[in-house]
Amino acid sequence: MVRRLTFVLIGAIICLASCTAISKKTPVCYIKPQHQFNNPQAQQAAQVFWTAFQTADYANSDYALSLLTQASAADPSDNHLVELTGLCSFWKVVEHGRGGIPSQQLHGLAQQSLAYVEEAGRREPHNRLIPGFISSAKYQTGAMTCNAPMMQEAICELQHNTEVYPQFHGFVEGWVLTAMLPPSHPAYEQAVEAYFKTLDSCAGIRVPRSFPKIGPIGLSILAKKSANETVCYNTNIAPHNVEGTMLGLGDALVKQGKFRQAKMVYESIPKIPAYANWPFKDALTTRLQNMEALQQKWVAESGCVDVAEPAMLFQSTMACTCCHATCNPAGRYILQ
Image (cartoon, rainbow, N blue to C red):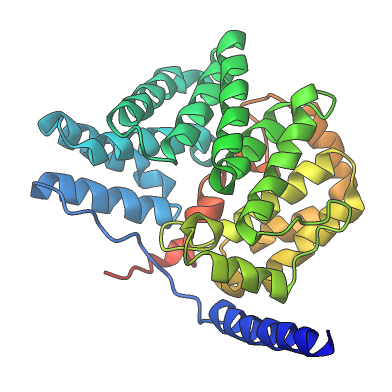
């Protein structure tokens, strides 16, 4: 028995050492590598989009969307262009506060975004991520147009998606529904649990709900697991995926008044290896210093589309770029 335990301990130490090495890699600033398109027009459109998106350059979102729309019209058979056009439209809608645009002016764009991502889903039925974009765009469109049946349909889809692929869709369900629903809603607690399901399924262990503190060992496990499931850690597409997930979970707990657990989650974020390059450190500081006031604000803003900062993640001006913006947005730091 002692001998067997010794082997287990040695194995655990070796695993931990290799995981820690992975997690301590020097953070790198990325712009997503380009898909190889059929023509230069499409290539340029994709480059403009990813550069604007991953540097949080909302001012260039109109230009990126214009190029993508033109390129998609010129080559309607390109599935990837359809998806990017939908994602760019959705980014522009969900972070509209960044441009000071009232949501009333974006109803048509929200519906366009939904149409594009639904078309992308029809073309790529085996893409495990697109259902999350569809359900998020559907809820956002429903909220903006006061379409209650559309919002309810989106809630059901978000919950179903989490059951099918929690590694990604647990975050999406938590991201959307904890911002848009009051804590008293029956689906709210399930949405908080969805965040935890993402962490559980990625780490392969159950994160304690009453003690949701993730340190170097937990982060190392996530880094190791990401070799087989890239959505579980930071990537060149989402350089701060873990930071954004933890910020969203912390927000959800604050809104419930679970300040002790929220503080544990928030205080885990600076331990993430890529944190030094995260452009949204001030948002974390604001949350840690104002949790009780933010709870009152966020409960009052449940379901609202136009809110002032600091807002819950899905309602905020960093709704997408919290995970996807790389390094200093103003620096335009790009790797070709």
